[in-house]
Length: 237
Ligand SMILES: Nc1nc2c(ncn2[C@@H]2O[C@H](COP(=O)(O)OP(=O)(O)O)[C@@H](O)[C@H]2O)c(=O)[nH]1
Ligand SMILES: Nc1ncnc2c1ncn2[C@@H]1O[C@H](COP(=O)(O)OP(=O)(O)O)[C@@H](O)[C@H]1O
Image 1 (cartoon, rainbow, N blue to C red):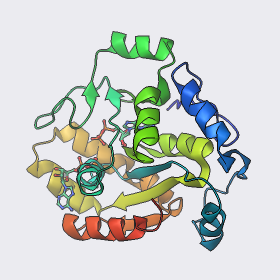
Image 2 (image 1 turned 90 degrees about the horizontal axis):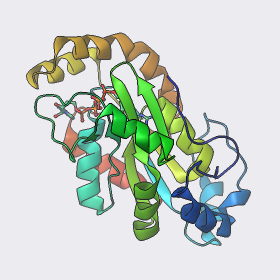
Image 3 (image 1 turned 45 degrees about the horizontal axis):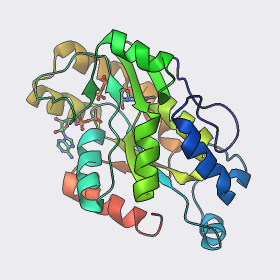
């Protein structure tokens, strides 16, 4: 895995042209003086107290967790219910049965992804077994400027990059389900067996990152999950 983009400091200047406007704007806010936080900490009363006498700062709601736990489904519903943009990543991986371009990902060719990388258009990106993934800096910064908050779904590399850049303004929500649930759900959706096997194979190494979260929950019933996340976010966005 090779996450690119952010490195050091808060917020880290995105290494691309489109990030400049966002960077100037963030630099103008007092958030630049925030200390770097330990990955294991949680948001506490001190954060709230500090935030009170500051200009509102953009919040990135980072949904992360184990593959197949329902992160994209929850992100989509949360986006609709909170009226906040869900910033879709671009990916070069093959589209699966039931997936739609512009709903689950923006599916693009390798050459187009590479061009975006060359033009430094990603706020962060990652190369995994099946393809590359990246969120466009322009889309993220526009969403934050226009709505004050945005939702993203990334793996642990993406989470780390976003925490480096946004500090505690990157709110970490970790979803998981049991391995048996992953198998049942993915089989029901007709996912390819090799994808199911990979999810199960990677489960143990993904689930340990649950300690690096501000809110951790098992996504059993989607309606209950949504309600809990909305409640958790109520005084944070
Ligand atoms: N770091 C990072 N991870 C991403 C990005 N977009 C998607 N991901 C994550 O990369 C992994 C891709 O795995 P894959 O099986 O293809 O996709 P899934 O079925 O959507 O989980 C998932 O954990 C995604 O959440 C991105 O822009 N950056
Ligand atoms: N709470 C839930 N109960 C049952 N099935 C769910 C739930 N949440 C999501 N799903 C289903 O599980 C599958 C994986 O969801 P998805 O959002 O793609 O997960 P992820 O993005 O974490 O890989 C999808 O078929 C989705 O419809």
